Length: 131
Image 1 (cartoon, one colour):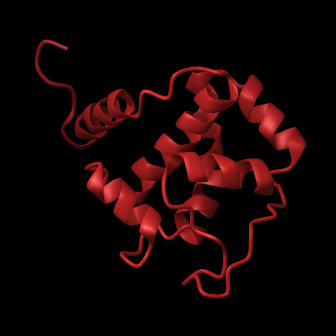
Image 2: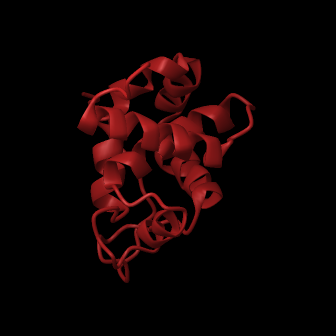
């Protein structure tokens, strides 16, 4: 778990009191503003397969403060429109996409969404026969 102070943009009109981004590019801008430089660098230098370590720190903050559990959140609506209904999936996709963004790699969000759905299906039901 991370022990980091975030500095989000405050928004008194937001249901959570902080600015909720509208889409993935807006998330990148807000993360660049709110995260300490050393954390941005830790994320960038991390191996993509090790991003899970942010699941109980930054990802919880994102799920709770950007409203990924609430239908009042415009970011939740953005992910719903992409077929991503679970807050856990949305926050993981955001962190992976942010890592790709910071490393100058293509985001490939549709591919990431397919992979996330396959992974979550295997978690629920076990691997498909022959895999």
